[in-house]
Length: 421
Ligand SMILES: [Fe+2]
Ligand SMILES: [Fe+2]
Image (spheres, rainbow, N blue to C red):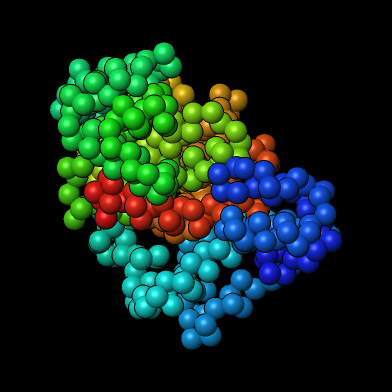
C-alpha cells in the first residue's frame, strides 16, 4: 500500500485504508474498488490523496524534487535542522517531511523571503545569540516542582466561577441555561467562547449568538471544557514576548490542540473538546519554568542543540522533573479533570501503561505540529515520535495531509480568537 494524490488515482484501484473526511465521516471502506463517482465525492470533501493497494512508497523519493530549484538548498538546510533526530525512513515521518516541504513551497510562493523562512523555521534561538547562550550558567538551584507551584497563584480573576466551570466540565447533566448563567458571570470569557464557537473550529453555517444556544448545539460538557482551557490561557497572558517568543508558543499550543481534536475524530474519542484542551495545555509546564528560571531553561536548550537527548530527558537529568510533570501537577492543583492531567503528564511518555489513548493522541499531535512547522515551545526541532504509539493508534498515513490542511485553516482563526496573532 502507498499514498497516491487524488489526480493519480484511477477507477478500479483498491483502497488500502478507509477513506474518511476530515470530520471522520466514512466515504469508502478499505478494500473497496474506487469508481469515478467516488473520486468526484472525494474532491467535494476536500480530500487530496488516498492509501491505495499495490502502490509502493518510494523510500528514496526526494521530497525536495517538487521545490523551486532556487530554494532547494534553503529547504534542505531547514529540513536538516528541524528533523535532525529523524532519519526519514519511518513512513509517517517521511510523509510529514513531504508535507512540510509543501508548506515551505506555499509560503515562498506567497512571497515570504528566504531570510524570513530561515528565521521562522530555524532561529533565532529565543532572541539571544548562541554565543551568549553557550556561556550561560547551567548551575544555580532550580526550584522544585512544589516550590514553583507554591508561587503560582490561584487561577483566573474569578476563582469561584472557574471552579464552578471545572465542576460543570465533569457533569453531563448540567443544563445549557445553567452553564450559560455560570460562564456569563465572566463577560470576557463568555465573549471569547462565543467567538471560538463561531470560528472555523466548528464552521457552523449560521452564527451562534448566545452561550445557551452554543451549549445546546455543541454540548454542555464540551463548552465547559473549552471554558476551562480559555481561562487557563488567560492566566498566562502576562509573560512578556521579549523573553520568550510567546506568539510561537501559543501557535504551537493551539495547533497541538487542533490536531489532537482532529485525530480524536479518527479514533472516535467522544469528548473531543477535552482533547483540544489537553493539547492546548500540554506544554504549560514550560511557561512555569520560563517564569521562574528563564536563564536555566535557555542554557538547557543550548545543551539540547548539541545533544541527541530530547529536551525533556535533559530536564529530568538536570532538574529531576520534566515540564510535562510540572504542567500536570499545576493542573492538579487547579483541579482540572484528571484525564487532561494524564495527557499533559504523558505527552512525552505515551508508551507508559498509565498513558490513556487521549495522552497518546496528544503525543502524536505534538510531533505532527512540530514537523509541520506550526509554532514551537522553545526549540524548533521535531521531538522523537514513539512508533509504538503510532502503531497502537493505527492512523493511516493518508490522514496527515487532511490534518495539515485543516490545521492551517483553523489555526489562523483561533489565533485571532485567543488574541495571540
Ligand atoms: Fe512538551
Ligand atoms: Fe509541545
